[in-house]
Each structure stands twice: as structure tokens, then as C-alpha cells.
Length: 560
Picture 1 (tube, rainbow, N blue to C red):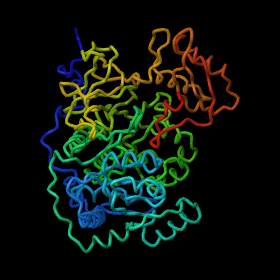
Picture 2 (tube, rainbow, N blue to C red):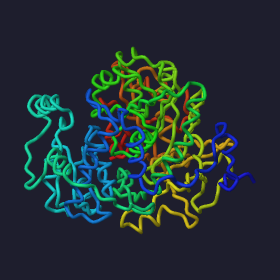
Picture 3 (spheres, one colour):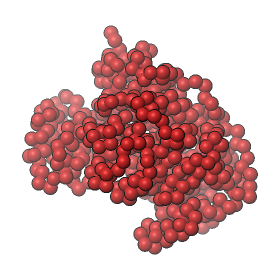
């Protein structure tokens, strides 16, 4: 029987030419080492641009050294957790580099968290310090007394923008009123921390590969938010894996001297953290930071000023941009690589993207628990594959049934992942770690899929999102993808509802672009491409669908 047993590694035959099957020994012993190497190597290059202001790699070195030295002066012990709660602004990569270089663990926090969510994460991680943007200080004010946080550094939007920063701060505070009144006694401003640190020396932290670099909290889509413990070696391994995978992007088009990345996905999210910040910095790339990717007109205006080569995004973001007239007028000739992740990229969206930009969306797959990339499509592909691609070098994918037995090629089971990028476990949650790690070292992803003969894996859905109609499995992704192929439908989300005849039935939430579209129209469209039990029994029209801050549709909220 031809099973997917990973020992066969059937996917290696589908690798791009000259791509190694394994990563070599890691060049650095810490993420800080990788970053510092880039600071030296690319000193004069632009590192990050935000709202028209650019900082170089040597600026990054100087500022992260100062903030790192300031943090060390607080008396924190090596390995202490420091929370960073900021959108994509210049202070974010500086703060992250500072925490790592000083020998501490970064706890990335979504700035849009509610007080309840923030309190949970600060308590769970045991963070002793936090670097936060003033726009969100009110959230911290409400919970800080119940946490272990003793040191607070508050940044303002314009801190690193020179004279223009005063205007930016005035607009953010007084015109747009984006900073609610707050009070955090004893806090230090980002600028004060910077100047205090400039008079100090950053002491070498002697960080080892098995020290914790990041506590990356999973979105809590499975219940309580848990911290994936990512060691320096996990994150460095993933950077090395991505580095081996990248050259295929330059087989057909020449690699520019300086790669320009669009960084619209938040850096506190594992996808942008690894792909933009770490992989980008390792190559001396220039990242264009987008503080608010939901403001599509500003986003398009920002990126129109640059020739860009690498564009990581999510299906919802690609879709929103495709529907913007100014985006359609941009110059896409320099674009070499469009990376899709975080959620399934829908074929209609991928086809429109290729038609407009001439660039295929290369879909990849990963999780916070895998630092994050586990699989990716070839970067020299001519067509969107509709799969999550091939396991990266040094990565094993095995499709297993409930009992942990490897499934035959083409049969659906749980996608299980093994490799040097897989986390050490959930922070202080051995019980939860035990549920997801197998005795032979595989991480059980909770995603259902199958592998084909060429080694490409196709996700059919999350285990828990599956809808069971009269004993048949219905995968919401399939229903949604077909629904949005209708020209009058912008977005769709399918969930299960109880049904007295079939156990469960499909309920479809639709955001329409055509106001005249009716429930009967949607059902008629679905009848043309979905077998009877997969068709929605109920259609509900909504103005928008609930999403995580990264843009993933929250089916759970729709079910509730």
C-alpha cells in the first residue's frame, strides 16, 4: 500500500532544481545573532519605511542597542518575558530586536486585544515589562495591577519620525482622536528609554539555541489562547528553510540588488515576523510597513511610492485590494513573489490576482506552533495549485487517522508535521502539549487534508469546522470557495447548524457586491457546482464578516 508515511519523502522529486532536502548546521546560535549580522552586513541599506520615514540597518543597530541596554538596566534576568504591543510602526522591529539582543523573550501582543485578552496573555506569560503604543495604553491601564508587569515603556506614533513626528502625533491625538486618555504611573516614554540607553552599553547576553526567543500566542480559535514556546533554534531553522526555498523565485526573473517587501501583515503575527522581519532582514531587504492594512486607500497610496518585489498577504487582503481601482493602476512589473498564508487562498481570488499582477500567488502553510512555515508551493510555479505545496527542507508531513496510522495517498486525515521548526511545547501547559505532540515527535495540526502522488498537500478543513450532513463530511472551505466564484458575492463563510433530517446542515453567510442578489440566486448558483448535501440550506446576508485582526474569518463567532 502506498501510504503517505513520511519516510518515503515522495515530495523531494517535486522540489525546484538545486534545492537541498535538508538545511545545514545553523549559522547563528540566536535570532539576535542573525539580526546583528544583518546590521553589520547591510549597514547603509534602508531597513524599514513607515509613513514616508525610513530607517537604515545601522539606525536599527543603534536604536535597538540603546533600548536593549535600557531594558538590561532595569535588572531583568536573562530569559525574562517582555511584551511588545504595537502595530506596524518603526518602533516595532526596533523593540523586538532590542528585547532579543538583551537576552529576553519577546511576547508579541495583538494591539487590538480587549482588556480580558491582554490580562490573560500578560499573566500567562509572566511578562515583567511591556513596550506599548499610547493608542492602546488605556487597555493596559485596566489590567496592569493584576499582572507581573513592573516596567512600562510607552511609544507615540511619531517617535522615530524626526520633525514630522510632531505633526503625526498631533494628527493621531487631536485630529483623529485615536489616543483615549490614559494613566500609567511610573511609565517611561520610548524616547526617554532611547536616550537613557544611549549612555549605556548593551551587555552580551550569551543566548543559546535552546533558549526561548518568542512566546507566540495562538489566536485562541480552539479555546484558551496558549503560548507556543519558540526556541531560538526553531525560528532560526525556519529562516534557514525559507532561505533554501527562496532562490526558485529568481529562476525566471532576475533578483534585484535590494529586495523590497510589503509588510501589511502585522509583525506581531508569526507569518510577518518570520517572512518579513527575519527572512527579510537576513537578505538585507527593505520592508514597507503598513500600520493599518484595513485602510485600503492609504495602503495603496503608501505602496504606490515604491517598486516592490515580495508581497505576503491573506486571501481577504488580496481580495480587498483587487476591488480597489487605484490598486489596479499600480506597476506590478517588479513583483516577483506573492505569498499567501494564514487561511486558504480561494481560486477565484488567485486567478484575478494573476490576471492583474502577472504574478502567481504561492500559497504556503504553517502555524504559530511551527515558527510558522511547514509547506510552500514552488516559487517558480506558472499556475496557482490550490494546494499548500510541498514540505520545506528538513520537514516531514504525515497524513494520519484518529489512531495515528499513516493514510494512503489521496485519503483525508489529519496533517501532522515534524521538523526543527516545531515548537518546544505550549508555555506552562504540558497537558495541552501532550494533546498535540505524538510519541514520535509529530505536531498534530488539527487541519484535515490529503497528499497527492507528487507530494503536494491539499487542506480540506479544520477538524472542528467540518459539517456533517447525513454522515457526509462537508468542508466549509469548499462551499465558500465555490460561493465566491459568483460575481455578486464578495465574501462567504459556511458553518454547521442543527437539522432534524440530516443531523447538520450548511448555513452560508454572504457579503454581496450586488445589492439585488437574493437567497434564491445564491442557492441556484451553489446548485451548479456543489452536490446536494453540500449546498447551503440557509443563506444570510451580512454587511461584513467577523475577522481576526490578521483577516481570518471567524466562523466560531458566526456559529455562536
